[in-house]
Image (cartoon, rainbow, N blue to C red; front, side, top):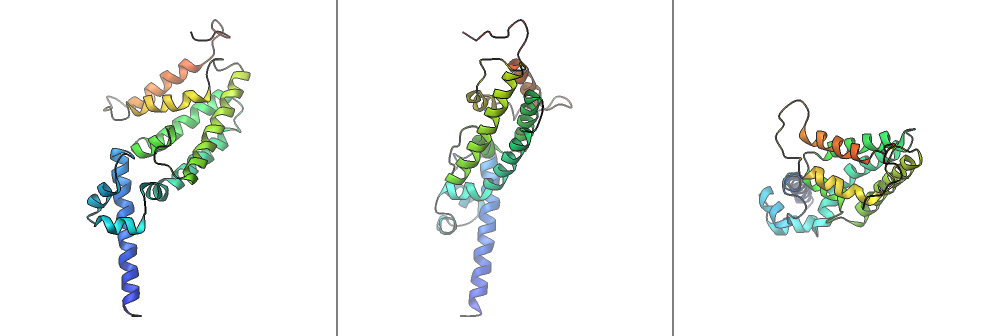
Length: 198
């Protein structure tokens, strides 16, 4: 028994790593609508093997994305130190979307929290809170339109998500161009300041 146990443990760890690697690829390509069955098939493992390590999709997503979202939250918190709140928000969104550019699952978690665990939900709430603070400060500084709210962030990420897979025709990736256009639309302008959209 003492000789078999290390072998069983090595096999279990090997299967766990195979599951994580497969899930990263499946979620990145297909998003969090993919199932544990999809992951097991991609890993070349039995469904029961995957369920023994990860009882549900939320647990598997947490194992993959908790650390990545923690890094994004840290970047959001660091952005709060910027003197120009509009520029700090712009730089943060570009950084966050760059991290998620090749990972549909991560983009989904950033914008809507689909399939998230409680830990991921708390991290995501922290990111949203930081964005809300930056928006409020930018409006106070007169650099952002008065009608912009933190609720606009998720739709912006969704819009960028829709162009992430467009082929690049030049040096600038399409999503960066469209993000710049959208963020420019959030700017306050002297001739429009104080006006609200109808």
